[in-house]
Image (cartoon, rainbow, N blue to C red; front, side):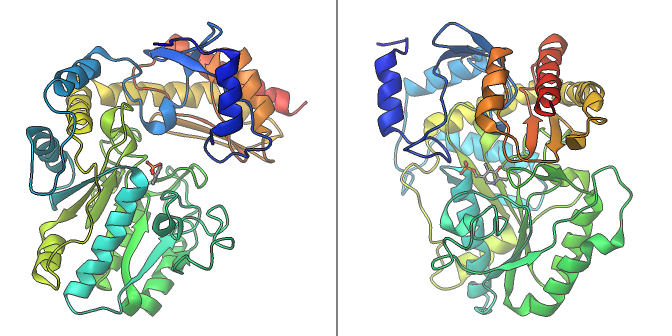
Length: 431
Ligand SMILES: *Cc1c(COP(=O)(O)O)cnc(C)c1O
């Protein structure tokens, strides 16, 4: 088995392998990783980087964790995978029970799927099939907010921000939905009733055609790393009730403690009718997601025509992924995660505040274990990425944003290295 990464491999990578959102003709450099442990990634040339990204929100316990390794090893010796049609297994049952216990009470039914995007597809299909089943077939549109991100598959893409989600390019196949203005209130700002007007007007006018409102609660992730007021969620819940519209929360990025509460909807103390989880579900070990819903939704779908929910992925409820997810959630619950996230939040707030006065910086914001510096102008990803690697950290900016969301286990000193690198590179950008 090769554990190193030679020049030839890098050449094959460059010539044949597509990376996320890249060109095959002029790809940006990629850095080969040979191993990872705790909050450190080890590159092929021996350099170690402190991870600021948690592999896109997922690796909340850090890498190569003995508890998760053990769960995977134990399960792989018994049952790695089996089809879920007509069969079941304890990893699925254990994980479903945990998810039902942890999420808001009304959510009682779990659909396991392969990735976040698919969880969103499933949520959209559930909402539409719900109204179809109760005889309101014209309710098949979605209402969402601008600056959102819900995944890269076509159904999910149709509810991403119209500009960053590239609706123009795919307009021939994308269904058209309703877009309200993004809430502009910051998380800590006092609530302004005007913030909900746009969504209110759209739901009032079009509710007869709307199956569901879908949004990322509290934190809009890849669509702009924006944090908004809990009151926005409360108002949305009230409007959905008033106008007979389902509410879908996409907790794929926010779930499992990232914002300081187990799920972001807890900031507003409300429950959605459908919830998507993914990313940190397996602690960053493998791809798994789930869509949860209420008995009301599942009963209606099951007593309608055809009476079956029309979805079923090949790798549904993969036992290996379910076993690791259960171990990851139990590990989270056995650690003082709330205190850790709070401590990270405090340090991010203090350390990043020195960026506030720089003219090239538009905004600095933190919430839970997420720190964001929004620049006035787009950032050169290739050059800043290289600078970060030189400084021994893994931070990947996009658009106008520098941001970090480290593993919860990160120690004060390592977090300080991350924030110092971030502030230094941001200062360089202005020169
Ligand atoms: C990442 C993400 C998705 C998509 O998940 P994938 O696993 O990449 O398909 C959907 N919604 C939100 C909020 C996300 O952050």
